[in-house]
Image (cartoon, rainbow, N blue to C red):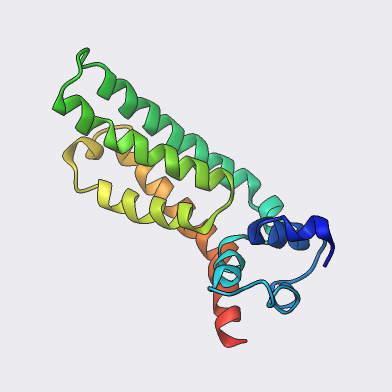
Length: 163
């Protein structure tokens, strides 16, 4: 291993090796010496293959735009109180979580799709999310995040468990 690659994080090395065309089993074998606490397994499960990123880029952007619209709408609502209060701070929780999910979705990370799937389904409990346009957008987000999670991660996660 070169001196330059010793200073890279495991995440960067996994991404670089995926870009070079190695599969996850080959990466696991190549980097097994660097993995002391299961970090390698974590990144192998959480980073998709570059070909899959390109294949599902349009759907990922669609999910991102849908979630961004809902986030901006919730942020506008939270800031419309005009003064700093407990209600305003509570209203800022949803946009803050959504911004984190947006970040993870744009990085094609597994946790972003899982959070989006679960939190979108749970958001339908709240009455304000059962009005137009949320009643249309939230099922779209549930479908897209579930579909992308399955296509980008779940099938490879099962393969890694079998190996």
